[in-house]
Length: 127
Length: 403
Image (cartoon, rainbow over all chains, first blue to last red; front, side, top):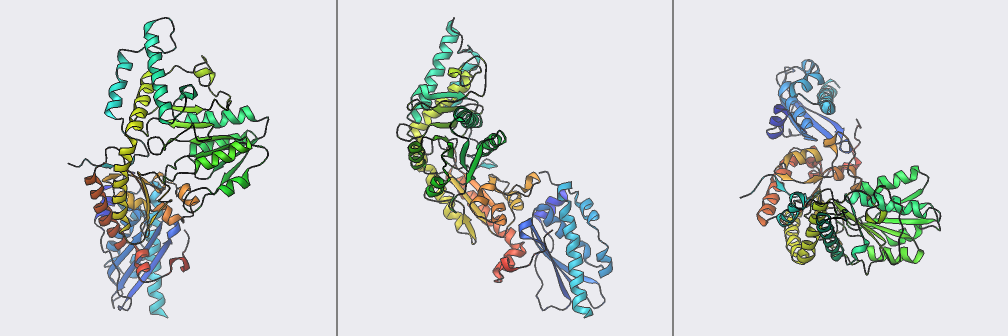
């Protein structure tokens, strides 16, 4: 399969790989996908007191496009408020990475990961 | 000097041995006669070359040359054997038996016969990939006319108990067909001893050219087939079509070399495989697919847990291997062979088949071991599943949101 340069770059040099400590202040986690489907993404955001995402980390089990989509998303959410992060759409991810049609689901999963992480943050902080 | 990508896919196809290629060329240019031409020397010399090659093929499997029919490859041989026998013997019954891990050339042929009104049983295999003879015996019915079992599995390399199956079939008067495409030059085949009625061969997995194969059709006791290809009555009417002299010469030469060199070659290749096996099972959470003892020496099929199949293939682009993952073809269906062995979808997806051959070097094996260590490590560093596994989370107990 021919991958775009951008997918290959994120695959070869994934950005922000890793995990935050579970007890760290302002950390929320979104885990989406299923091993049997071939993709699992874990996206973590670290939100500052001002409600801005200071940092993000990811781990992904999945194909090159899934790895690239989640790597890209960690770059995009940084510096955004939660609402701004929720505005990131899968179509933007797919366009940026020039994903082929059979890989669109990877960008949808990355969008879902953002939503799941934000929901986790809100659950922890608005309860 | 390593040449990239390193070829470790000898069960997909092999290069033509230079000795084989050299033998073939004169039969394309100089000695171009039609072996069926009876009226001049061009035809006579081509016919002699074809018959010499038939002897060479027969010799590798201890058969009589008269029992060898030329075809275009193992797919055609499988079609001719199974359809030919089913059609000829349908008056006796309409039930066929084969195995879930067979090659598609057998499975799809049997499926086609089902559409024509035959009935079929697809046997399960054990976790090690081998069939259980008791399961076979239980599947046999009074109207069973054909049993088809492959000699060596193409994905996991396990060697089925052909001698024992032959005894069972012969006792019941059932035609026994064996797809031996992956077996020639790898295991000893003695058709004088084995109670096999039909056996399929091809050249291109044994250092011969693509596009040529053969079917062994037993004469004593005689097995009858209905031809699938009609025309000039070549090959005793079983397979019409002008014989491809150069291809046939190539197959003969490749089988001659296999017969003479297989003992030495298998010992060398087996050592390389064991080196690879030791180097890779070194990694945590790896699983060898298929029985290790009852297996051809050149095959190693391993699943690497917690890494995804397609990213694994991307990561190892320096080596040419096959994957149990079908993701790259836009389908999510993993290897049906590994599923039949009871592997779950994830492990089936994250498997790699390494097949070593005549031209593989120790340096290439060592490079491969190092490459896999680096890349599996990197992908696991990236894998949330690996992290959970290391934290002691039972992944089977997690509620995943299917998507």
